[in-house]
Image 1 (tube, each protein chain N blue to C red):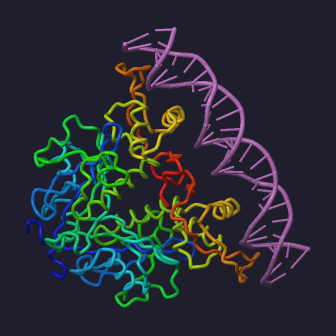
Image 2 (tube, each protein chain N blue to C red; image 1 turned 90 degrees about the vertical axis):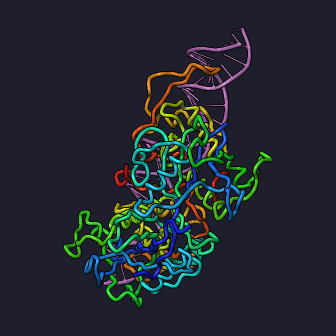
Image 3 (cartoon, rainbow over the protein chains, first blue to last red; image 1 turned 135 degrees about the vertical axis):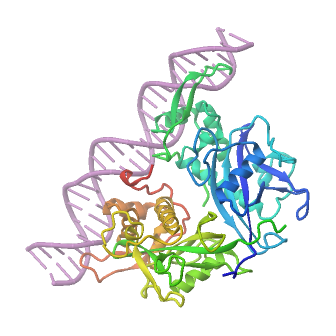
Length: 251
Length: 251
DNA sequence: ACAAAAGTGTTAAACTTACACCCATGG
DNA sequence: CCATGGGTGTAAGTTTAACACTTTTGT
């Protein structure tokens, strides 16, 4: 049964976070050919006795320092962050070195104090998604195309994140364990790239059963009236969903 | 770079259709160990120079006789049927013969005149999903557990189909190129396992832009008033979505 | 004529949207 | 006391849900 031996299997990570009210993706500079010097998604080989989700969790920890409980292949366990399988890419020529099938994972993480302070992550950095995908990039910075088929994987990851915010409470994965409604709104606005009415958003979030739960305390630092703090609630899906405004929809 | 050679890569298919107003899945009897005699999802090895979607399309043709244009890794091209990547399963011990990573695909096909009349499909058959997943199986027939982790893959495929009917026009993939509103409603009721109001369903379907388009003709065979025939419309997503009734929702 | 299924009309409830308005804090 | 953001109220428009009712066929 050695018909199709010789495949190499990797995991690649689309790690998204919100920084400065904009959606950012974690990228690494490739130090060796092929695509030397180009940005790429972080990732690595699946070990011989390792599950796919375990490999993704391990790579995420190596690249970001985030330790996750039983993340992938199970519901996000605890407070912040989220990891899920995205899709698998295996075109015969996608890697010039040989037949490499990559299982892409999507990770949503809170804005980390030390950006990409992992061991492997010598040249890892957060890049604005608009710049990385080369839409209407406002920053004149790193506009270089991504290595391999990573631009396509990134686009799929971003679209998945956009869609999932509609009908799941996953926006909270971008926030610290306790957060305000405004922080949550910033997440939606950054991911969808569209402004939302603060009043209606507040009502919607607090009224949808299981989305958020009051944490008791309030913030004090800001300029205006202090905001209540919330934790993520037990709901797995939002019902009814929070649909993004029509103009930003695909199709 | 031969760190993780030795993976075998397969595609497995969750092929769903509607027969006798119930959701059915295409299964094959395994003729050789392991899991000899058990039901399994159809599938096979990815060829050395074959793309994943191509492998899935090929297997689908071999098992069902369905020829698809540019199905997977592209929008469903033409009239009936649909094929999309579902998820990838690669637990180290999922196959006792070695390290096999399988990329599962979900196919939605119309009720075929000759069930599973393919070449490979010596022992292929349509099995009611309730029986295959062993929920509250009404049929006392084949209740045996599926081989490998196929029960889990099947469950994921069914849940994906249920969710996708909500916000895409994919129900039409279960129908022939021309169909009535009642046929489309049968699809929703079979997949969701819940009755829908025929009047409101009719209005919803015909009012949602791009869901269906009139085909001109009408049916005549049935008992009551003849129904108009429709074709699938150009819409990729339903907006607003057609949400399934609350009691049947997960979470 | 009657049963069966297709399709339209109508109404109340629920939800979204837009925006007026008040609340609480820092400067 | 004023700017800034947090949070509540309210009314108009839209969508859903439930069901009465008419249309068109086979028997």
